[in-house]
Image 1 (cartoon, rainbow, N blue to C red):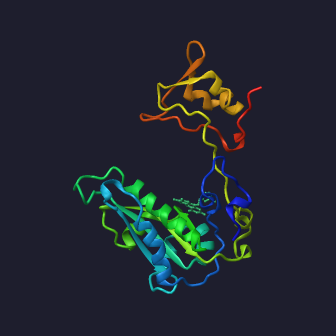
Image 2 (tube, rainbow, N blue to C red):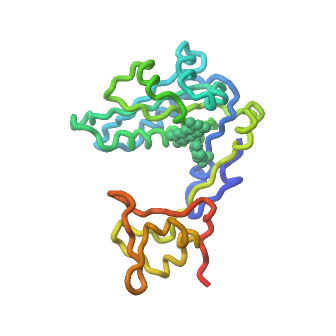
Image 3 (cartoon, helix red, strand yellow):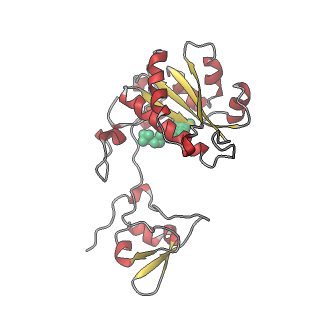
Length: 251
Ligand SMILES: Cc1cc2nc3c(=O)[nH]c(=O)nc-3n(C[C@H](O)[C@H](O)[C@H](O)COP(=O)(O)O)c2cc1C
């Protein structure tokens, strides 16, 4: 399994872990021992959550379990094509009511996302391919795995020992490489109504100033532009497209 840092790079200094982790689809078809999987769940256990309510729950099937065909059959055909070689399929769900307050939780999905991130990072550190999936039947998952309505089905995760790329269907072989990310905007407007100096705007990719993305900002008087909300809580964080990655240098 190649390291992410062999094809992508961080723009600011971070631990190599974040850039090196990526989710191969090519898996070996080998079994994963329960103890090994428990190490990933243990990492997820230490994720932070609002009120420390820990609203995540995980349902899983190892490939030798009787439930494996049920989990696998929930996947879309395109995911089945590679995930059938995983060692474990894990379904992340989150509880919509906060156990600590008894009130509807505003952050159950957010908290479960943190748990999945910890799970995935530990999996990477342990040498596993850990790949998130939303390509499965959410309604059938809820029904066939008898998940009560108070839980939201979040996402499925395939965990496996890395395998040969040749096991993948040809279109997936071409995509079997770490992906890049949008850049962080050099000087994001803190929130709608905030001001951005024209000098900062000059650092933004040229297309961002010329095409539809500029909708997030409008010209103000003098040497500043006003940030305009895109959504009710629309904080403008980054607006550029992947092909605009290189910020323009000031002359
Ligand atoms: C919640 C979630 C759902 C995803 N769903 C799928 C999926 O159904 N099928 C798939 O092949 N990849 C899926 N992915 C993988 C993403 O496409 C992949 O993580 C993304 O392109 C980033 O690539 P990177 O992790 O290599 O950096 C999913 C990832 C996440 C986090």
